[in-house]
Amino acid sequence: MKIELFADVVPKTAENFRQFCTGEFRKDGVPIRYKGRTFHRVIKDFMIQGGDFVNGDGTGVASIYRGPFADENFKLRHSAPGLLSMANSGPSTNGCQFFITCSKCDWLVGKHVVFGKIIDGLLVMRKMFPQALTINPNCRW
Image (tube, rainbow, N blue to C red):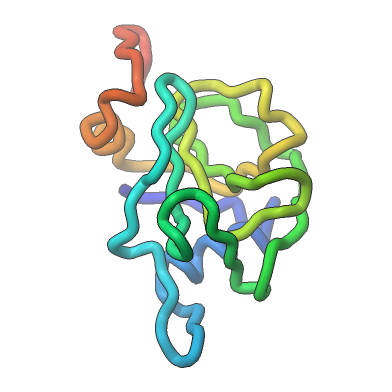
């Protein structure tokens, strides 16, 4: 899948995700990255969540900023499938976990920071996680 990061709108959040994708961030000289990690949470018609390389179950928090970091802004909306957003446990508790939307999620306004979108590979996501999606013949994935 190809992802576009919205670094012009949420630079700190985008950089956190980017470094965990590339393995640039290191702890004790060891790269910390998403590669090989699982998506631990799938909710039908809502989202697919992953990124917890700490515990692997949705309880871990880590960031390139050495701990949870603040919500940058909520300028971008959860307006379509394929958007990447920070998973959190409340205001300003962003870390390594993220989710990909499976549909429009208006109720998330002001709660989760959107920082990117899938620009190529939504069909791959659809095939990997068919249980997360209701097949809508009018949907243009």
